Length: 627
Image (cartoon, rainbow, N blue to C red; front, side, top):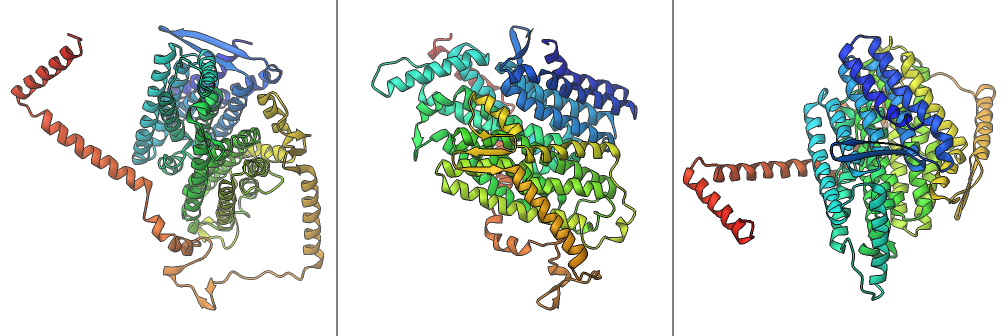
């Protein structure tokens, strides 16, 4: 069983390298699928072990560093989500990827994500984190240089932040493995608690150290999770690459940031952060900050998603907003909130991954991305439409889909934690999500179909298989959310949420997914019978759009496919003038100008100036006692 871990980690990247070297159509697709299937198969095989509380480990030495990996109860959950998304990505790329380059870096991302999720020391964690960034950067670079540069700069900031945090931990503890560091943080937390009661203690980490560690790690993980205000790279990067790859990019890579917050900030450092940073309005301060970062991310990204005229940008901003729900749930600081966050990690991965596969199919068959160019595709792509409908229902939080179950738990947690404003952000985000998915649903699939789309065909079979896997999971985990909750309870070692496979019972409410499903089925059947036998329905021709009895002019067309939410954009005009994207660009130009001034001032070609620089440095070293 031990040999299974390296196979899980390295099967994708080995398959990607061979596919890139050979680059033969048909061969590279087979290799890619094999490389994606292997991790899923081995993780499923390991389920009985990890579900029973066991662990499968693997380690090796790299130079003077020991690299260790483990598939345990926590890491398996994130790894299986990443592996399923990786398989769905590979199925999509069979139809959309045109070269071995795409397969190389897509499968390299797959390996890197699994490495991050299973790493048990900071050396392994950081190396695979950087491999993950490099591979995803190369995927974006092929399609859009500007988007890749923005992603690279933010990722470098996150990487250096993480490196500084790791260096500080190593300086204080002399350790890099998670187990040892966790014990030191836990012991230090106990001493911090005693010091607050007046006992004299010697602490490993001071309050200043903890503030720095929290800031550094939050920056690193916040960049990858695309949390506000570090989200500016995501809309361009998600939309400017192979949409099949974005299934994994949005659904799995963003979860690396969430995993870091869960594993490092919460499980490893949580108690120490609580005692060091204190509370605010009865909530741990560091979690309160997370809750508000999540709330702002939900609201801002959802508003921006509503205003998009490009299908890819809408889904990209939506992806950012949905990760905000997870951060918000963690920030509630309750076991129910943590459970809701973990459930939404899964549900967001499968419904947003499904969205991107549907988008990949639509773009592949039509070559279009603007809402104004679509219409009436449900008749031409009925299976893809059905999968898109499943994704819409799940994202909008409509039962009996997985998205409803996870969001319901998050609502319950926010209300139970007595955080009304944060709960309000959730409801506002959900209303906005409904607004933009309605546009996705109608603009693409219903209404008049442009004549240049009359020859559109259904999506290729591999794409449909990938959609089918994620679509079925959305339905299964929606009707039987207890399957997920049962495993999440194992992570806590106690039943945080009770009930059965179909019923969830929390301290504040009960949700019976099976009953809701049966009621909906009966309602749909009755509605269908009334429509067929009782409705006096007739077909009508498509007419021009009118507003208050007057034809809408071309410059103010408010059809659902074009400028539908323009009035909202005009109402938000004051706020839309401010952009973090533009702020970072201006800050970058200022830093570039400042660096240029320094370069011209110090590197002036004057040998006498260089002599003075050397003399000053030697004097400083002498005063410090180095010389």
